[in-house]
Image (cartoon, rainbow, N blue to C red; front, side, top):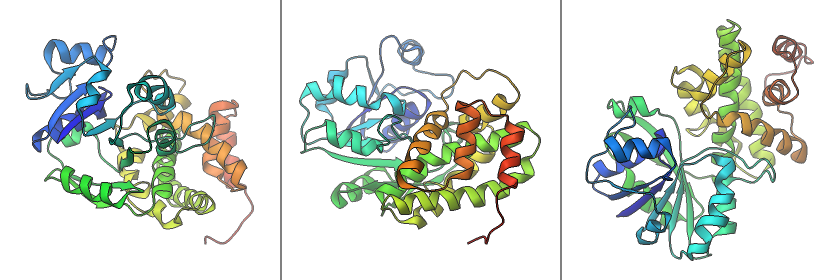
Length: 319
C-alpha cells in the first residue's frame, strides 16, 4: 500500500521504519525547516533509527495526493491548522487518515478524529492508532500490543490486517470515544507519576494508576463511551510505558517540573490537562488527579499542597 507519514519526529519516523519493513511503499514528510527532517535528508538517521533507501523523504506536502493512507503524527494542538490550512486545500478524496497521536483540542474539547472528520471531504475515513510502546524499544526488537479504532469497520479491519507484524500485535478497537479520551488522559497521569518521582514518592504510583484509571473511566462514560475502555490498551495498558519508563516525555516532564528543571521536549499531557479541565466542567465529572495536575501546571499551585489536598478528600468507597 502507498502510505505517507506526516511528522518526522521520533514516533512518525518509527512508524515509517516499521511499515517499510512490512513491505508498504512509504513516504515520510517533514518541513524543510525541521531539524529532524534535515537530519534524515543528510544522514537518513535521527540518532535513534536509520531509514532505509526504500523510504522516500519529502518536504512537499502535496506528495500525500499519491497516498492511499495518510498517517499523521504531529503536535495535537497543531492538528487543526494542518487539516484546515494545508491538507483541505489539496482537495483530497477517498483517503484513509490514521492518527498516531494522543490529545484533545484545548479550545473546543474535541477529540482529534472529530477535527479531521470536520475538515476533510466526507469521502475520507479516519482511524486512530493507540497503545503502549517506545521508539527505543520497538527499534531494539521488543514487541508490544496496540489498538486501532475507527467508526468504519471496513477501515479498521483493513488497517489491522495491513499493519500487524511480529513487532506489533494489533487489537480491533470497539469504542472510538473511550479510546481517544483514555489515550489522551494517560499522558496527564504520566505527568503526575513524574511529579511523584520528583518528590521521591514513587511508591504512590500504584494508587495513582488505580485511581487515575477510575476517574478517566467516569469521564469516558459521561461522554458516551464505554467506561471499560479506560482499562484497555489505550489507557491502563499504556501505563507501564508512561508511568514508569525512562523514555516517557510526560513522566520526565513531571519529574523535572517539581525539581525546577527545564524540559525542552514535547509533553502532550501539559496541553491535555487543560483540555480535561474543560471537559470535566462541561460533563460535570470529578477528575481529582487530572485537576490537581492542571492546578499545579496552570495555576501555580504548590505540588505538595495539591497532593495533600488529594489525601484530605472526603472518605468514600473504592467503587
